[in-house]
Image (cartoon, rainbow, N blue to C red; front, side):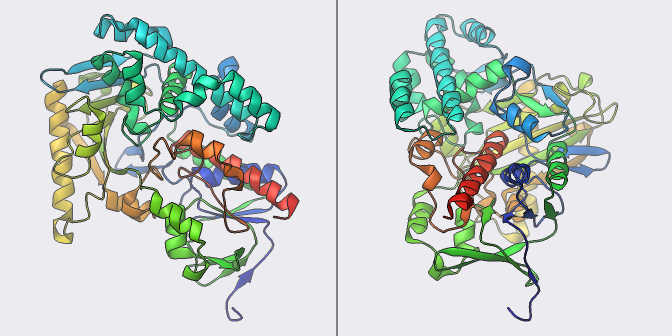
Length: 518
């Protein structure tokens, strides 16, 4: 190392300026730590960013924030972001989602409102006789939300007496955590069509309803209905830039265009990180926004990888990868002929079939559509609008695509998807496309550095979701002294909101590590 540039003087190095990394850096800066954030890309945020094509600025990922609310109804994420002092203009979305099932026999086309009562009313309208069972579902959702909020008040680590209180107060919650969503809805007696409408959100969790915990899903839906989805008025890049300012104002540094190639671990202890140009940064505390699979496969010497980490990586399944289609249209939103912010389009209401079909390019015919102008009319230039499509693949669907066929394949997928939506809702998109960009799983793999272009971390089943991770002693769930992981693959699962929470959580644990000398 004598001929390499060596840098010292930082309390903690954060690898990656994704949502988790930004949140952790803001928290640590507020608590007096000198932090350095290292990001391989030229902008912060990871998935929380935007890009420009022609006169359009596109939101990179189709997102909406959960656990937000405002004022007296402010949720955990709103409080976290406001606590950091982020200067962001927020917009509440006054609808839950639209869902289209194209099955000729059992299909539906619905637009679901926010608000628990309004949501139940609409399902009852679509499926007469479903009200009582859906009221039970929503009561479970309220209970799950109360449980999550109770755990948050105890920093997800209740002491012995609090655990007794938890078992007494939330005994029913503990019973349903291991029960899959689909099974629980059938136990409650939710009619098939109502169940399929309710399960439409499953893409946001990343696993189908036969695998995801009912407690997690019910909590998410109930939170969206009671606190509304929220988005940043000036795209999520506004959030990331606000984080950048807060981190720097608190004395931290962020180096962009700076890739970390190695985390130096010897004898089960972090000693520093090495950059792409050989520069070595000495530090004994690292928070990684890069998922463990990548870190232990590429960035830590093979002999230093703990056996437990090998087993965890092999036990876990990578979550979904994405193909995203960005369309800038030369007509105003009012002339598009379709009104909805977020629409899920399916060939079947069976989420397991949807999940299995999404394993291959040929089989995957489902997609999500986001029209931001529905929530923010001036999100594109006057007289224009944007329509974005996302297809989530459950396996490495592009693995066998030949290099010479790559552009043809992704363009064919985009054409088929757009034409299908045109036919399904009766509008014209193709003849109004002024700008189009297609990001395949390979695009996301290059940008995020994740295997297969994974945008969700690890698939969260009933055994490896939010509640099991919280309850399994996650505070001590690390095997190398000085190294912790943050982001969508962390304890809080995937998503913008959960990544911000994960960053704060692990940063707090690292402060405790420093205080205790562990």
